[in-house]
Length: 257
Image (cartoon, rainbow, N blue to C red):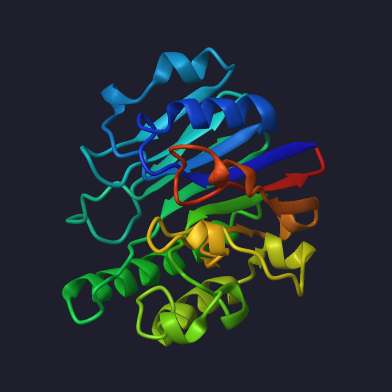
């Protein structure tokens, strides 16, 4: 069995005690991290290696940044999302490890929607669709995991009306994600839990965690070869309730070896 998890840690250095505690408890074979908020030389490499992980890091000073941790060696296959050589934001990292190909994705937020940030988000999703289609041609077991900054359906949000004008829930955003899935991917959580209401993000404001005012924006998309091996998938709420927690919590799936 291979356990793959994704987690927007909201600064790996600020959340290092939280991250190491969860890694020791959950024991993922592969962990996709987003929003590490540091360059590679500031990543806590020694602490993560001491837990038994190899690390691939695509960092950026103070913002963004993605990483892949694995118990097996990593072969990096793509650093940065193809399609725009001028885009320097560290939001995509892809590697082969543990017999599968994985990508850690930190999709742009896109707010405010009346600024160029929203168009950047949609353009980024278009580029991701092109690359995701190319990956399917390899016929490998693939997991595209991360913070997609997209609420797929109304049931994935505690109050759809409150989020109606937000970039995460705009019709264009949701359609763009559906188009990626429609290429031939499967959303792991919905494969295992077709009807369940669950969230992966709770804002720091307005006591959202205490009131369970959450949204589900962290997703694991699996290629047909990966979904054939899918055994389980869930959202681990426990880390969000810890002191100094990230506003996201891990999402994980297991594949038959």
